[in-house]
Amino acid sequence: MMSRRQKLLATNQVPVSSQFLWLGLALLWCSGYLLAAEQHAPDLAVHEWGTFTAIAGADGQTVKWIPFQGSIDLPGFVERLRTATPKPFLRGTIRMETPVMYFYSPRDLTVSVEVAFSRGVITEWYPHATRIQPQGPVLGSDLGNLKADGSIGWDEVEIAPNVSGDLLREPRENHYYYARDTSSSSVRVNTTAGQQQEKFLFYRGASAAALPLVAKLGPAGKVYLKNLSQEQIPAMIFFERRGERVGYRLVRGIEDDAVFDEPELTNNVDSVTSDLEAALVDQGLYRDEAHAMIETWQNSWWEEGSRLIYIVPRGFIDKVLPLTISPAPEQLLRVFVGRLEIVTPETARAVETAFATHDNRTLNQYSRFLGAILDIAKQQR
Image (cartoon, rainbow, N blue to C red; front, side, top):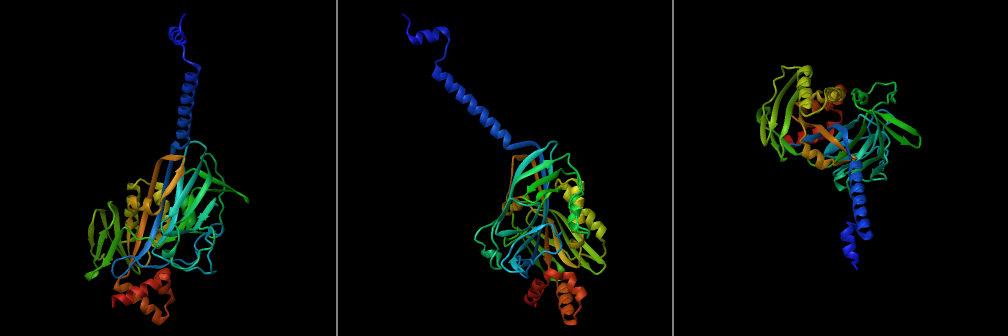
């Protein structure tokens, strides 16, 4: 008589226990495959642009100033940070302004988005976020004393490429609206008050983080730059404006140190705008995205004074502003422009004279930087 094992071998059968084992392995493989597919969106592209604004001190290091004083330059429907006082004065080194996140998908898709800000807080956003950290009012004024990094999260963002319609808009014109002039897909977020629709996710913040560079003003108006990151700074512009006179110098591919001579005020805003827009496209932004960014910020970037305008190294963005999108997009592009104010003797004299003569027009040209400019001017004497 044949044994059970001999019969199985003879009939090429597999024991029931082995069948369940193989079935289990197959189900496990399939579930793993499906899970991986759910975590990845091969036809989704996400493009983001934003700015980091800071001020260089007399020693070239970024100084603490008041980057958030209660924003009045955004539409009323934008949500804002709660603070412990009616007029918050959060001191930090960086004002992160108008990051907007565009989504491109050929089909309807739902994603979750999470952004953290190293040594910082998120101060404004739209559409409505699922969560904001910290949850309660921010106490104190020095962002360097934060107990934990701030963050913002949207759990269910519906990407709707075939949806159009009127977006929320106030009668008064606002530079916020320029960012909508792209071919990106619409995004929708459900709230208790109804659905909010936009062309992007928008957020802002302030931080006490250090920049990836040092820029010190030297003799004869020269600026001595040191790149502290491990990456190349793709492009940098040393810009200066005195009334209607404009000048700038452009340098590309800064690996380590660089020296900028004082710009000759013989150029024009159109030229520097064209050069910066080309640099943004070189970094991968679509032409309409780059143009939307320029339209949003050119009145601020090219205002009175001296500053460095540069493309921020990608590694610094990901370190200071880590971003998680699920399912993960096939392409994630992040292009930020850094703005570093340089307090030259001309700027210091202009501000001090304006204070002495009650010249409000000149003071308004420097507005939020006034306190820092006066402090740096004292150090330069």
